[in-house]
Image 1 (cartoon, one colour):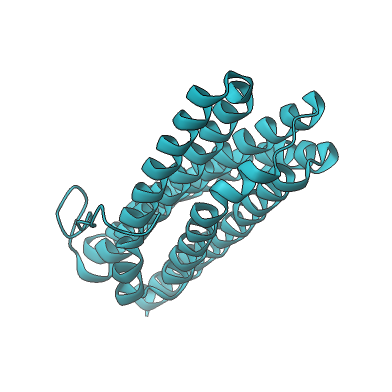
Image 2: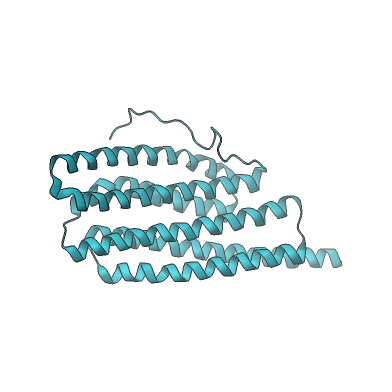
Length: 236
């Protein structure tokens, strides 16, 4: 009975951590969406809010890391339980970095707005990659919440689509800058935003890989399974 009681306490503590991780995930999702809205319409107040929320995300990272460390020390989990905690720690780190990337986007959007540069066309250039990254992040968090290895495996392939879209955006922006030097400043800012979005896609893929590690016990990082090939003939 003592062992059963201890196991129930462990499950409750782990579930409390997972719930807080999902709360953190919801915050960074909102950060990303708000940052892209700032880039689309130019809203300094919303950009400032995104940057302030980064402090909240950072504090959650610290408190969750501490909670995971204490859980390991107190409960000394083994096998799948230990995999779950270690993967959760990595998910926390990736979510914090998503918040960092969203903050970068908000900062660029605010600077563009303050300079008075029109960004509508540039937003359209990154809209597709932003939508893909948004879906990836949402699906990765959903897979984490439900320990759904199948969903996690399906979304990993989308990272190759984002990489392809980023290369296409980079080529187009370079062309704009070569044809009209007056576009250089805004084009570089747009490229910075596109790179931040691409990195958010990378972090979503990482979360999916950790879900598979927990569910199946397989580490598929840096494997062909984790990075499927994609044709360069995809539509621009």
